Every structure is written in structure tokens, then in C-alpha cells.
Amino acid sequence: MPGKIKQIAVYGKGGIGKSTTTSNISAALSKLGFKVMQFGCDPKSDSTNTLRGGQYIPTVLDTLREKTNVKATDVIFEGYNGIYCVEAGGPSPGVGCAGRGIITAVELFKQQKAFEKLDLDYVIYDVLGDVVCGGFAVPIREGIAEHVFTVSSADFMAIYAANNLFKGIAKYSHSGGALLGGIIANSINQPYAKHIVDDFAEKTKTKIMQYVPRSVTVTQSELQGKTTIEAAPDSEQAAVYMELADRIAKHEVSATPSPLEISELREWAASWANQLIALETGALTSQAQGI
Image 1 (cartoon, rainbow, N blue to C red):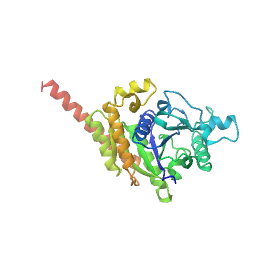
Image 2: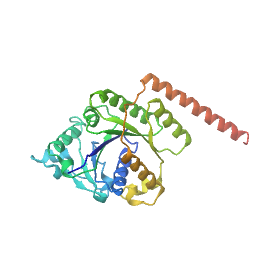
Image 3: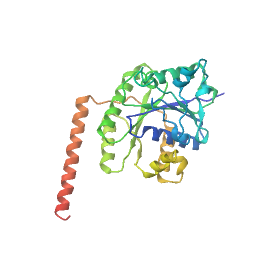
């Protein structure tokens, strides 16, 4: 009898490292012995590339456009360490809703009970997080995902996108929607960046799942079309991802966040800007005095 499938959604603004993080989580979970599917929900359809040696796979929407009676198995491809890879896809450029691929793909898989037949432990949805669209909200709104994690750096636009996501989670939390597991703090190489994301997490009543530093190891791995877990398994960066995956595997209780209103977010950002200006001015003064 198949066990309960743990379904997770990872959101984050474009360019924040969301797909990189998601693919390394998938790879790490597979190394921990779990059966994993990564479900790419970005119209660029490149979520699973580093799980398949840099290769793109046919998307659900493209396959449906080419033929009728599509089976879920037609759009599932095996990747690194047995991970199942799916790309929802998007519409033709300039036509239709970018979130439609998620809606269509999820319906196809639900109708055919694809997750249950594969006896999966995890389904991880990699979702674009800076587009407020009904399609991209599907994993949250319909409670398809139990737990939501957001990838964010200390940059304002990344935090702005995370805060918007929190608003969506809060909106649907009373009607069976997914809840927030926490923040994956990416590109954290300076103490001030850690302090900023820590403060944002405290203000919105959530927690940090992991601090992920920016690393050349990730770049080198992706240039080979691989995750860090595959290309550099003994690296410090791989250890960070393995620890993150272990925390996600052990995570059971998510919660409703407390997003900031836009005026509160602006005030919060301005206060941090002033602190950083003061910090930089103090450092320059110290240097000028030869300290």
C-alpha cells in the first residue's frame, strides 16, 4: 500500500536561484533514499535541466498540443538518481495564460493518479513566485502542496515577492490552502544579508530553513548540466543542500505567515537602508582614521 505523498511547493522570484535550489533539494532527498518527482511550473520549462545533464524535456502543454489522449507517463522523464522529471510548460509567446500549464498538468496527473502509481515519497513543485496569477497560485489555493517554502535573498525585490506570496498563503489558509514552511535564504555571504532576512522572517512570523551561500561550485556544476549534489558531492555547498533536504524531510508543521502591508514593508526597507548607510559610513571613517 503506497504511503502518504509529501507535496511541497518552492516559490521565488525569477533569477533568485529557485530552480537551482529546488533541483538540489530533489537530488539530496533522492540521496537520502526517497522517491522524488520534480514538477517544473515555470513557463521557461528549465526547472529539471540539471537533473538531466542539461537536457530539456517535452512539456505537458506541448505534448497536449501535439496529440490527444496523453498519458501521464508520456511526460514523465527519469533524471539523476531515479528522480522523475516533469515540466508543465507554457503557452506560445504572447498567447494565453502562463499559469495554464500548471492547471492543465496538475489535472492530468490527478485524473490518472500518476503520483500514487509511482509510489512517490515527495512531489516538489518549482513555481515562479513573482507573478500574481491564478495558475501559479494553484499549488497553494487548492492545497495540492502541503508545505510552501520560498527562496529569497536579502534584496528588496526578492523579499517583496516573498511577502506577496505570504499574502496569497494567508488568503487561502482558511479554505484548505497550503501553509508556509519557511524561508530558504539564498546568496547569504555577508553578515548584514543574514540579519536582513532574519528580521524579515521575524516580522512575518516565519523561520529560516537554511542559509545558502553564493558559491562558484554551483556555477561550475550547472555549466556541466548537473546539480551540486551530483557534480560536487563532497563540497561544502553540497553539505548545505543535504542539511536543507534533511530539515525539509523532518518538517511536519507549517503555519500561516503574517505578511507586511506595502507601507510597512517600505518603512522596514527604509530602516535597513539607513542602517546599512550608517554601517558603510562608519567603516569608511574607520579606514580614513587608519583603524
